[in-house]
Length: 198
Image 1: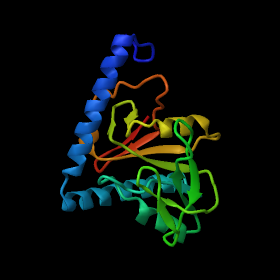
Image 2: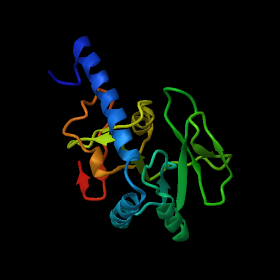
Image 3: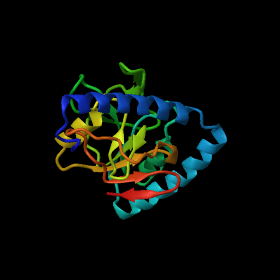
């Protein structure tokens, strides 16, 4: 049976599978020691720098790091120093695409409805390259996030679509995330060990 035309039973099993996988992978990531995370970050940053050199970003979209996600702020600061722009996602409402506000290290921030810092004010812009955190990912570049569907809606709505790069750790890799019909595969996955292109 194809995941894109599931029966109700399959759908229910998939939702349980994805919820369980999400919980397990978040716990595993949060258990990583600080020294290992720092080492992973160096490898990930180097891979992202190489990707951005091949596909220069004028506007880099990234996420404020939570739950021991990769911290892209140093990378964004280097892009700013080279004359580029950076932005952070803003949740406007449930079940809607994200918007993006400009960010600099001096931006005033406030917690959003999920407790994640987001810029107060600032210009709304559209990223050329979007770094998307991974809870889990598979061999086809589908991802599992936190379950809100915001990035899938955003990628479906943006035209032209930004280069979508999933960023995470090898411990998040699985054979199959069982994507649904609205899930969108990412263009590239970057971990501390690999650059996986679709």
